Image 1: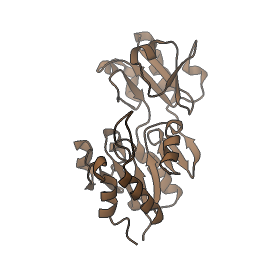
Image 2: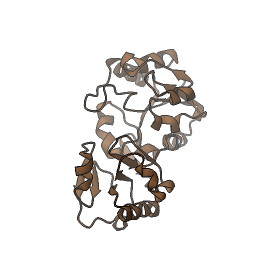
Image 3: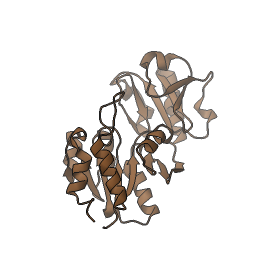
Image 4: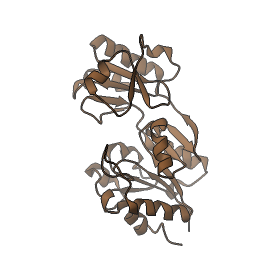
Length: 259
């Protein structure tokens, strides 16, 4: 069988149940086992930081990952590197947040912890997605790299931040938004180039708006049955819901199990 390079989003694609009640369907586990036995390259593609996704990668028996919204690459369990955000642009954003009294935090290292200058970020968001560590006198200028930033506010207050126009960002929670890379195709192409593989041999699986960046014409795009309509419109194939054996069904229909 021709070797294919398969890239999977996590939540809503590989994992069902939502935050706090997540689980990997048994049919998905079986599909991944059969794909590995068939000799395909398997890789996670996530917006999460590498540090936050690494344990889950291991739990699902993956060894490769596109992380940090496309800017982090892990191959054979080894981190090859993470491209940070533009440092000057993040500093400009934080300066504007200070001027306009927006609550902010930054992530200057590959870890499961964000840094905040005071308790306001946690008090406003009560967020448990990751740990928030208070660093007295926190200044983004003290760090050589800045991987992510976080701004606590309600929609649509983010549009009042002029410096945000120069940065990639997205909102997953009503209390705050993420300033982070959002180009999964960037990381996928880096991996394909690393192996000198034809882009046409890649297949991507996703369900949410942050998967739009990897749904491009260069390769085959599979949308879950539970995917947002905008993603389905860009898909080459629409499979069943993640809870209805969607991954297994797609791989079967695409002939990825055949010997």
